[in-house]
Image 1 (cartoon, rainbow, N blue to C red):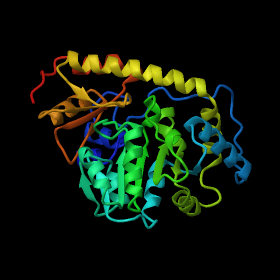
Image 2: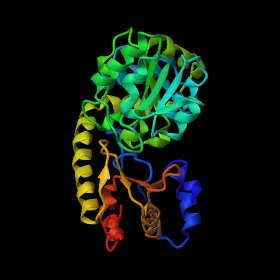
Image 3: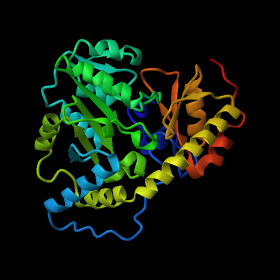
Image 4: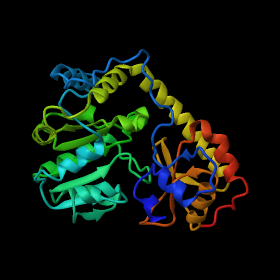
Amino acid sequence: MRELTFHGGRLEAAARRFPAAPVPWLDLSTGINPHPWHPPAPLTIDQHRLPPPEALDALLTAARAAFGFAGALTAVPGSELGLRLLALLDLPRPWRMVTPCYRTHRDVLPGATPIVAEAVEEAAGAGGTILLANPNNPDGRLFAPATLLRIARRLGASGGVLVIDEAFVDAVAGARILPLLTADDPVIVSRSFGKFYGLAGVRLGFVAGAAGWVAGIAALAGDWPVSATALAYGTAAYRDAGWGEAMRARLTVEAAALDALLVAHGLHATGACPLFRLIERVDAADLFARLAHAGILTRPFEEDGAWLRIGLPGAGRERLAAALTGHAGARG
């Protein structure tokens, strides 16, 4: 069971743990958009040669337009690696991270002092580095971008920097901080491509914000930071602005439908990110097992056995409803 708490998407481990579960599995453990972007026309991808610099320039130009940001930006092979590369930079101390948080955040700032969201503004007065996710994982908590900018500037007054993991931000209208940033703001932003566009296997992410820190990441990533496939998919998807707007609206509707489904089965969820919801119950392990026996993988957490995160079911909504039918009402 512990193997399934490290991150979502471990379908092979789930199949070993629950060998009698029906297949195919319905994976609700990742928070990845169940409606992936598809190229409107076939993409030309040359896997034989190294990607030319012009291809990377085109990706960054398309991403800047999509992010509403004209400042420093570099591509990385997945937002997780971008965060891990930060550990190789000399980020100012003391280190704090807002909890609950991604497991990766603990690796980025080993030994960092955990703080709750309500303590961030006060903690900013001490300078150093504060790392948080917005929207947060797993609870979906959301800071207003203007609030984060105020926190960052308070940190900056003492030589500090705010690191914001925006892996899920594309799904939430008006939640991005990048359009508010100036060149002098002490902010490092990590961005994911795969979660909102539903293409996690492409392995594409970005680091943006304060030029000096972004340059440090770019130097570590090298001349060919991402593959030809990532360059082609990212450039085309970010140019498809209409898809993004329509998808945000669709996800909002589907998240409301998921909330209604959960409530109808005595489950009350929290979270401002439409790609997932967090349930907190004393019988979360029983619910996880019930769904797993039905071939539905959700996300349990080692740090709190009462948590269970459920992603949007997409076309699997009726299957989820059937698996929940008969589950006992809320008990704590």
